[in-house]
Image (cartoon, helix red, strand yellow):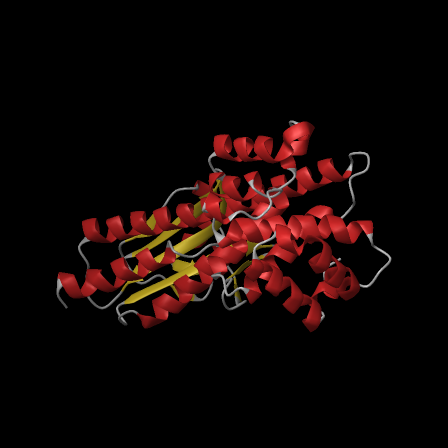
Length: 311
């Protein structure tokens, strides 16, 4: 087996791992990809579940005492390797030569062990070590994405709680706007990315009230721009109270959020009436204020009964 034959499957497979968005997906993808590689290559990812080790993708549990390669890697928090067939990966599984157990960390804490084996044909150890480094890097990349996403969701929830604690702020308003915008975007055949963008913008559309209640749309947009992470939502938030004007040259997403915001406020003022009745009156009274395509989508939501599910 040539060097190219040995290295190419691993390099391409490992690069695919960095495209996943959660540690669970990473672990599942790793075990799937491992099964597709040459027979001379094997890998396993394990997490610690009292009192045993667990393979996340399959749910299989294994023994891994301190005397095994996995146990030693956990205790030492360093990559542990064997260059001979002596010893075990974990109880009942012999360590094939060469074999590594590589700790995977999240914020410095070891949360799993990756084992990598090369059997059949001795590899170039320098090349094999570089593959380990790439594997560890892909894990850290995915971990940061997952942690950042969790932090963003937590931050959004805090903003919603802060807004709903204000006097005269309608409970559930933020989520109603976000869900309405999302459903309108679905009927408008906007992409999955655009739908998620509108969902996120809906959650942030009133955050400016905490900064400058007299001009909260502009204040919220400025906050998002300065924060960088959600800068792509700034335009949607900035124009969320703007009447439709084709001359502004805005995209369909901006007008979608603007209608979702206005309709949600209107619906809250008529909360004892059915959603379809409120929607019909809204179209008559305020239809000229909104983009015609988005207005048609609102009518579609009303006819389908979807508006009743948004509360």
